[in-house]
Length: 383
Image 1 (cartoon, rainbow, N blue to C red):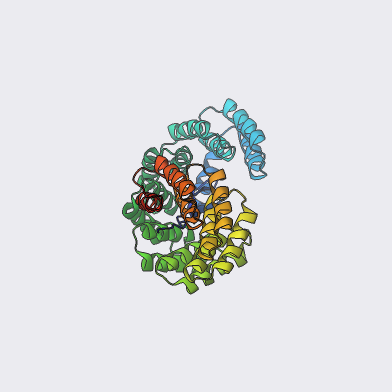
Image 2: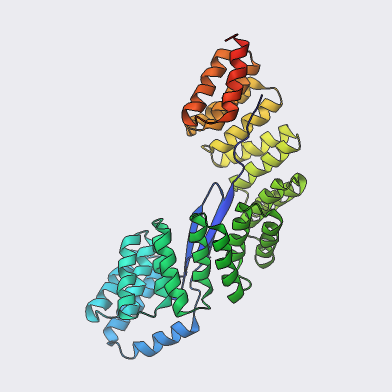
């Protein structure tokens, strides 16, 4: 009889956008832990200097509107900031700094298409604005236009080859295209120009994980932690990678570090439960899954994994109740349907078990475990 735990990947994936009225970010998440790199106002002296020089040639009224927009943006009043930038642009239509600031504010409102249009205007009037090219890429990334985002990052890098942030962001886009080796090469460039760039080290670690290079991934996560000890996603990802190496006790220690930093890290609680499961500590595993579910009640993976631990304790009826919750939140969850069938099988409910396997096979016709387990149930019914 084959039973399944949920896919363990509960990683975090993170990135960085560089907004730069001075700067920027990128954030996203897989079921695994969060590439989210925030580089607010990461200031470039050269850019700020260029701003000062150019402002001398701009009508004072336009500069006042620009400064007002900038201050409003920094206060989180993005709609008002846009209105101020619009006033600056009305006075001086080729005012690239105002177009750039307008794009920045639109980014913050999640209006990515409009942000791109503003960055395009900034670039039209100042083609060598590497910041605008980078942030344009970030907006495209948020629209899941990864290839176009890479093209924008490439322009930023062409203008400023040692600009670490677009190298990092390029790595993120490549990661989402499944081009892990190329992503690592981009992260390496980001790290070359900014050795303490923890987000780049993190992205590098996740890409190495995807390639099955677990020891190297751990080394990257260790670098993240060296530069940013409270980076809970790195601790969680490190734990996940140790789990893959069968180092379950060490994995739990990493998850505990993540939880100490962020008590409501449902991914860390779930992954901690998985490592406890591997050690046969099913009751403790259930307690961890319960914490994950308390934080995120619709966390279908944790419900499934909880069911798996209950199954291992031969508490089949309770296991089925957990699988039912997983299915309630994700009706096409083939693992949960299969696991539910296994628990029903051990209760002697072979017909109901077959019905569960059938649901799993409707979702994934080649799911070998469901096929195998279904045959066992049919044999019990002498079919």
